[in-house]
Image 1 (tube, rainbow over the protein chains, first blue to last red):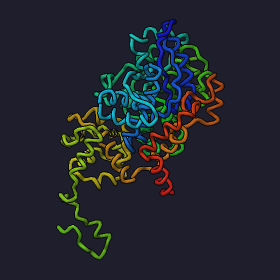
Image 2: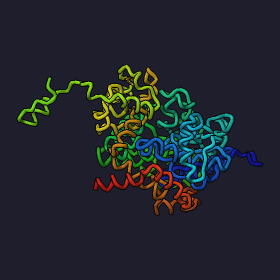
Image 3: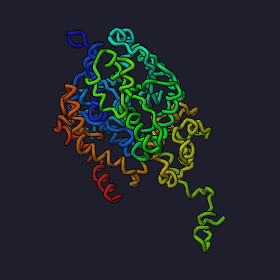
Image 4: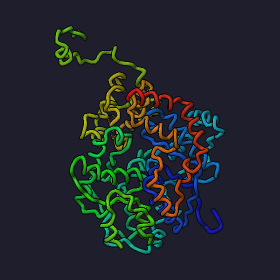
Amino acid sequence: MSGNNMRQYAFFLGCIAPNRYPGIEAAAIKTSKKVGIELLPLKGASCCPAPGAFGSIDLNIWYAMAARNVVLAEQMNMDIALICNGCYKSIYEVNHKLKHNDELRDGVNEVLKEIDMEFKGTVDVWHLAELYYDPEIVGIKKLADSVTRPLTGAKIAVHYGCHLMKPKKERHFGNTENPMWIEELVAALGAEPVQYRNKMQCCGAGGGVRGYDLAHALDITNEKMINLQEVGADALTEVCPFCQLQYDRGQIEIQEKFGSTYGLPVLHYNELLGLAQGMNPDELALDLHAVDVEPFLKKIL
Amino acid sequence: MARSKNYQDPKLEEKLKDRKYYATDSNPDFLKEVEKIGQTIAHMCYQCGTCTGSCPSAPRSSYRIRLFMRKAVLGLEEEALTDPDLWLCTTCYSCTDRCPRDIAPTDVIMAMRNLAAKRDIVPRNFLQTVQLIYKSGHGVPNNDVNRAARVKLGLEAEPETTHKYPEYIPGIQKIIDHYELKAKADRLVAQGE
Ligand code: SF4
Ligand code: SF4
């Protein structure tokens, strides 16, 4: 902890937030500061690496590459905070596995030795959303207190994604059939969280399927879009830039491939939090979103 | 039944092919390898089908996770590893959270993909991600439109990653080269062209 009572974390960026939706990165840094979390640069971090692509080819390389990112944080003597479910899968899970499996850790350290690194198992990995929810760290009340522009009147649906909470026995989030904690985070911003059919279904993009068979991936996304449309959501929120890409650019691709139009704005929770804390749309680069966010902004501004 | 019938019409031969399971088609080591790589008890599967019933890929394709589970148990390595459906799992882990036998079917798929990759069966998009990361550290690298947007946001044009500190890239390349994965990706991508 630093003198000003801020909790400090090494901020693991991943790829899609910094390189496609930089508003998420900017918002994460600014919004966290207002609730007592300081995100510090994790210099030289790389792709987590993509669990679908790397893990499918060789799990051992996936362990070693993810471990390198963890070691960078160990060298800072700081826990990692991150903003993407895919990154969570790699960084959290590999950190956890290597801490508890000597054989895996020794194998990884043999490779890391070639670049003068060693995995020691001295830090923990957190998704920023779970830090927001944790009353010991931030908690709903402090989050609600940071809101200066409540998102009153907006109906917001939540996409939890897969790799934050599942597989549940290797995580600590409990129930994965109908969780409600992100809805609580949404309600803290003054918005109305809405439920929809088959909420926990995957966005369709993972496991390399988006690249392997785009139509197949989009057909899964489209099923979710139909269920979201049914309940009249004004926006969809998530905590995974890769899911965001799949829903946001995916809606354009769905239009081209299947001829169905939804126009549902898709916002990362940190972008929502930014708006609720009074950030302007141009401080969030919302113009980079493929689906126009304007109708949602009209509702809340 | 004869395994080969030598019918004069090859189409009929294929249509009427003997589809029985022969012990000689089975590689018992396959199950062991899958369990070791996937770190899951695949042999406990009792074929209830909860996994397929939970699977977002099943209703829109011929992909059946339960079938892959059976092929693991029966040691049908060839059939499993050469089936293009192997690559339709989104790794959503719904099956894993619901399996009443506490198996991780998702990790069975991951293990089978690892074994397929050893035989050079890997879809192109997976290999291209490897090539991108080898070059820049990122599977989805920065671009000019994004750089301009970052600067407007008050961020630096390059994020605090290998993009801003390319001196970290050789370390990443060493890890990938340790497994000779870059050479393999280059070779297989070139073959596909
Ligand atoms: S849910 Fe589990 S036990 Fe049932 S078929 Fe699938 S893997 Fe086998
Ligand atoms: S993890 Fe794969 S096999 Fe299991 S339900 Fe999801 S897509 Fe289907």
